[in-house]
Image (tube, rainbow, N blue to C red):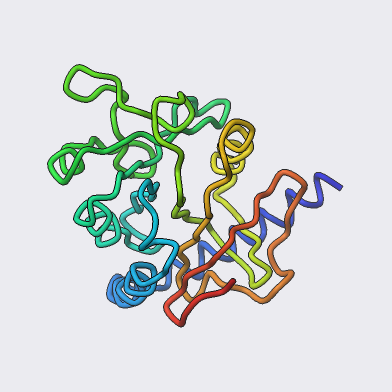
Length: 210
C-alpha cells in the first residue's frame, strides 16, 4: 500500500512539474497578483498577528514577494521557513526583522532564500524552539492540491513533519495554501496518506477553495 501511494505521488509530481514548466513568467505573475489580492482580503489574514509565509522559488510556483512585503508593512510578525536538518526532513520557521533583513538573506536549496539562525548576534526566535509567539497563520506552498483540501508537497515531508511536531505543543494555526490555477485539481485527485496534512483554505487566481 505504501509503495503504491509513493508511486501515485511520484507520478502526479512528474506530471505537475511538466505542466508548470509550460507556464510563462508573465502567466505566473498575473496569477500571483490575483492570489495576493485575495489573500490580503481574507479575514483570517487581516486578523492575524504572527504569520509564516514561504519565500517562493524563482519559477514554477506562486510568487510571494508582494505577500511578504504586505505582512511586513502591516506590522505583523513574519516567520519564514528554513530547513534545519535536510537528511531528516526537519524544518523550522524563523522570525524576520523587516525588508533589510529579507533582502540580506542568502539563497539555499532550490534557490530559495533562507534565514541564518542568528541575526545581529542573537538567535532568531523560531516556532519550534518555543522562543516565538504562537503562529496564527501559515501560508504554504505545494506541488498540487485538490478541492477536498488535500495537499501534495515536494516529496520530503518538511511541512507535514513540522505541523505534526508543532501541533503537539501549540494550538494549530490556520493553514492557507497558495496555488496556481494549474495546481488545483478536482476532489480526490491528490493521493494522501495518514501523515499528510490537509489545509484549511486554498487560494487560487479564481478565488477560494475551503
